[in-house]
Length: 231
Image (tube, rainbow, N blue to C red; front, top):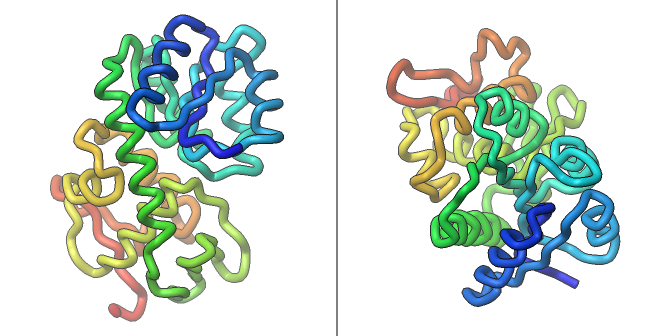
């Protein structure tokens, strides 16, 4: 069965309330209370997006995220009462697309989820140029795959969406606000989230991520994708 959202959280009352609220607003949602339940659920069901708590009764949301990322590239939003920068950095580095602190507003969380679902649905419908090549880099827009010198590079859905937007608007300054509005379509996304995604993209497509030549920073302004041939 196909769901819009899967909530994985061992706080049963909060998880159930969030699930019920989402379903009231036509976001088809299921809930699992443990890592084992979630892994079993995903064997027979699909979800467009996952809300994942870090502290699960039978394991860690971090470990579950790593496991999910082995086979799925759908958006994963961490939801946790843990609010240290280290937790946020780990969550984004292992494949999370955003980090939301508890307690949260159900309305704001629903808005974020709807935005994410719409954004990924829109990408699926977008005809986009089939193949973009830039030196050793090759990006297949239709199949959402990336290779460098023929070697596959694994990206999450959000990382690919960000790369696609940068490429489609290459050789011009793209402000952070523009990226928030057009990639995340979300006013609540933080600079930290964007910075981690940019760093991971550089690690995937740059020959020297610490001295990038494709995805360059424009100081205090934003970013620019610079193609090798200038086109």
